[in-house]
Image (cartoon, rainbow, N blue to C red):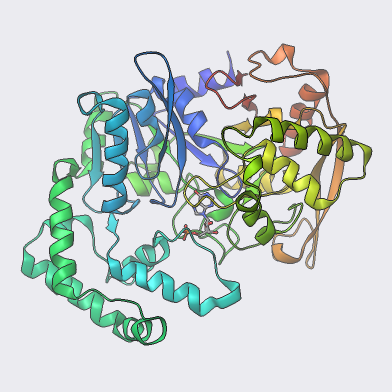
Length: 482
Ligand code: IMP
């Protein structure tokens, strides 16, 4: 029996998480697995996530939609849950809903349930995020600007606003907002003084939030109780992670992390389901990891800031209508890489253009690095993942040699994680392949070098966590199931 079939069969709750710094293609894995589950549920993150999903219309044409808060499992027509661990943004949700309804048709939309306990964004959260980033100056986290940190932080300080507060009496909501406002007053005043920021008054905020809340009232309930009841009747849940292991607030590259729980440890808490029921995990690793924002990335090829700007200053290489220029750039640069004469910039931009590495939420260019098996091993071990999904494997085609990181040399010694921003990395170079593997579905048809790559990776990680899915192209079909 194939690894993935066995996992699907045995799972009560199957959690899908990222292994790197996000953008691993979790949406594609979810899309493949969702048909075998009754619910798809988000347990962490917020509108900072961006999952690209495809809907088929009546004529069989695929329409691309980027979801941020709504689980990407919606594309498979599954009922979706936004659990209490999610940082909620009403305006963002309404925008997504409108877009999805226009593609799918209002009457065909699967049910969506939002938990009443979700922390919710107010304009004050956004002002606080701008303040915190400004104070950091050149060390800014470079967040997605969705106020995730303030939602998590103010919630922990017990001055946050929860979704259910927006359905309480005007008096109760005003009291909570007033407490939040008072706590932030010195910062709000500074923002007016130093950055000429407009700070909305309490009454206005309260009115607007209440009005927005009314527009989503049909979706809001106690999602944990709802899911538990359904699970008693045998329902299976696919828990959809956001961000990734190295962006997790506890285990990631702190402080350059997101503020939620991006590992599978967040699924029980962020959904309100007993840990013993969250029994299977797939971790999704990109063949060439990427990062946006600040923070360490030991196997990064080039320069974060320049990589982030590259797509904007090279529009002729990205997006529809650029195929000829892209092809020319890619074949010329690949020849240089294989001849050993490519600069770091050329190597990085080759992968950036090949993978169209631009953020789904922010549009920033993603900086690319080589596969780092040391970091992947750490993520697999900490999360106890049952299988790995290796995405974008087709991006390696054509390289004569494929560098993979198998050593970290750090201040605290080899393989230390104490000081990720100052480690240097050691590479193994694996043999590459020439044959086209685009959209390949059969493991046995992969070139020998491709199969060797996967087997060596499994071996490095410990030999007991199989690579169960291998991405071989952007479409639904481009997947090897092992
Ligand atoms: P925040 O989650 O907006 O607070 O951003 C914190 C860090 O996480 C920043 O470096 C973001 O670029 C990064 N980040 C958050 N969500 C994602 C994601 O879905 N993909 C990639 N990076 C993300």
